[in-house]
Length: 188
Image (cartoon, rainbow, N blue to C red; front, side, top):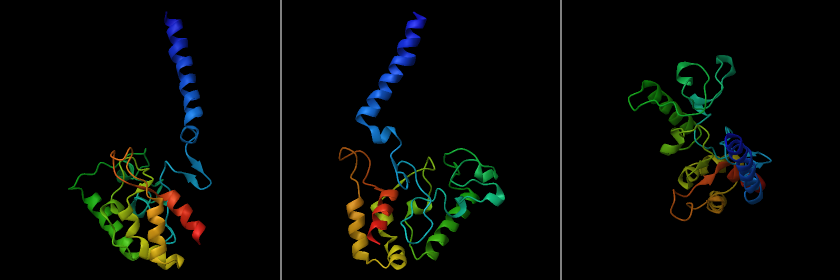
């Protein structure tokens, strides 16, 4: 019975699941890879020519090889040691969190953007590829100045790249930053 269960649940079930995923959800099963990266993992956009995602590898969370910090918001960066993906779990009274948030607000102001709360707070995983339409809209002056595209064109692009909530009611609408910036690059 143990051997039968091992073969059935250890091999047949796993192969059937992989087969179904490859047959019906090939792009997602293969990691949603595009020519510029994966749409499932946030990319590091630092140029004002592009829309930026959440600050998972920006500002105080950026990689710094000289200090042996790999970048991204992870729980061990606060201790000065590279760690795994996850939030730092710094509480609202944390001096480190306050300093990092102030640094991010200053970073955005230097770029000419009045940031939304999402643009100065990291995602729970440290890999969030999505932003809200409002997060993109506040970045229009920065991107327009850097690319020479009109704000009207950028607003239309944001509207075109917006995805509605799953099934119309699960979660909220979102924009995949990689897809938005890929579409933006085609306009230039």
